[in-house]
Image 1: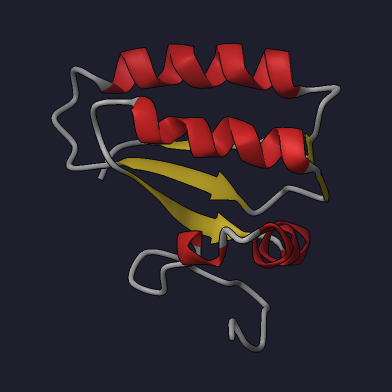
Image 2 (image 1 turned 90 degrees about the vertical axis):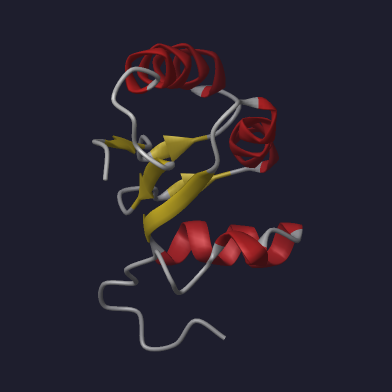
Length: 102
């Protein structure tokens, strides 16, 4: 598996541009490593809004699939609230101290 991208603790409209630039640079670096998918970690995300989730949703337009490999409770709750629960794929995701993902 390739190196994972660590999403910032504040994944919101105020950090969206900076996060997008860092994410695109990381994706360009990962293009040469031959990994099957891009790995994103949201373990440190404490604050997330629609802009942050929209940024992640835009990954559907890159050439390689991506998977969430870790997630904070704030990120999980935001995904469920905004209709992105399908990102919480148990095959890839470590939930840390989360008791349940359903």
